[in-house]
Image 1 (cartoon, helix red, strand yellow):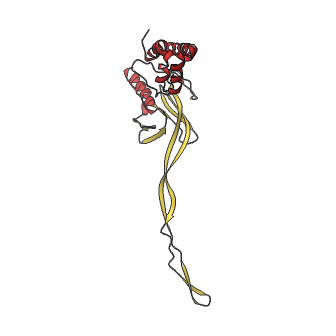
Image 2: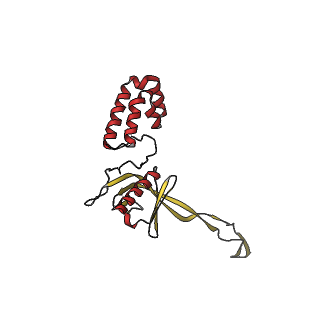
Image 3: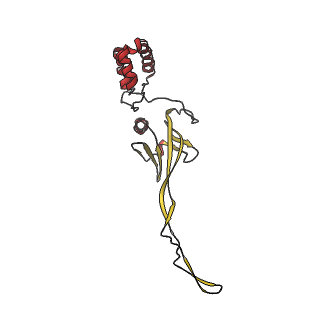
Length: 215
């Protein structure tokens, strides 16, 4: 058996779960305090969690809770279900909610306009003075479209009403993670997506690319 972070989580839950340590590690502070005050919900909640962590460790998965997902060097690439139609020999390693972000430069208002004054100089004849058209003011507006990001061992796929794309990993030029998103570069085209776990997505992609290079 290969020792992984999932087995470390199990041991911590087994030895210290009655004190709620595993709940604090999941960033579930309220439940952690409850476990601490009730000795793991009178040991019942603790034993239930021990079983959950054991099953997760046997599957090679980690119970992340509210912690940011992380793929350590000892962890195997996860295999998850996805809405993507997979080809022969293709498996999905990541599937999660994402938002396509497109920035448009549009007219957001007008400035510099003024009212005109009409002066009558003769019967049926007048002159309009001081009128000029307001200048349009342009600004960047972001259009967000929710969808699903899937990463397989062969492709990066975003499915949504707008901004959908299906690209081969071999065509990937660069990947740039941000605080709340990630940008994929395919040739001269960039696809920015907002996601709650950009670092984890980057780790998945890096592992896939490195694995393909080793073959």
